Image (cartoon, rainbow, N blue to C red; front, side):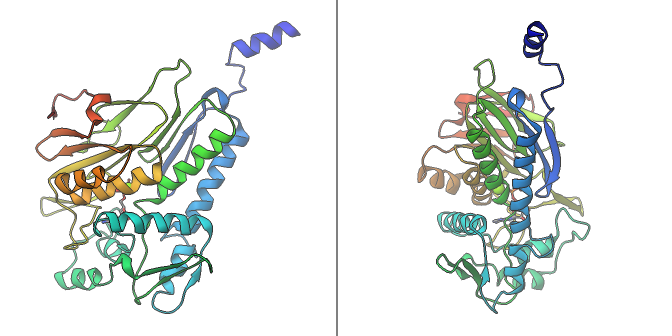
Length: 332
Ligand code: ADP
Ligand code: MG
């Protein structure tokens, strides 16, 4: 009996360790791998937390807090839970830091373009102007004490697509940390949190998506311990029309997909909410202004991939990066 039991502990294949879990959540495929520390219960806890966050922050699902706030824009404040208040406050901070290039009130523009949906189309100039008039993070009023959110103008709409997955990854990381697991990987559609280290104690190797190719092809590898790695780029969702490609990160300056000479930005940070917001913000800002934003923050590394296929790191991201694709070149 003792022999059998210890054999089971050695041969982890006794069927006790559940495989990694993948589900469609937060508008993407979410995969969590808890390795040897995984239990069905822990996976359940993490995925219900994802659903809870999605249930508050989605702008598509029925009657989420965000949907209710959008519906009451210009009319009245709406009750919001701790999760939403936290995410929205952080979003407003990045809106300010990025001079509005990142803006959680981008909803009317996102809906107009519909990129990534069946209704994707190139809008008329007038429509873009009208939608742009509704985009302004300064018109979001959070009442911390009352626990409410109010959008000042009718027609305004929150869209937390550029930040909610990062928050969800942080929340999952917290659950895993509390459970005392030595290492785990959370992947929410490329929004990655690599907790601890591998069992061997070696760093995690995170592939950086090739922005010109399908999901799963990569330009190189980042080696990290206890870090989150988040990429924003032109590959994720786009509309092809008239020989041009229109991607899903929109410029709050002109209402068109942001064209700053970049194909993607990858941010390496300690918290995923920051990495998620920043990868979008840096992409929208471009390299020069992006670097200035990174300089104003601590413990942020960014990898910029340019349309001319050059790759730059800032300030030190290249130190942990190995280029593997022959099509790209490093510029130090
Ligand atoms: P993904 O979530 O696809 O991995 P991002 O984190 O960069 O990529 O988020 C892009 C999403 O953020 C868009 O689909 C849209 O919902 C929203 N968005 C688009 N432009 C902006 C912007 N300028 N500021 C904030 N959010 C934006
Ligand atoms: Mg983002």
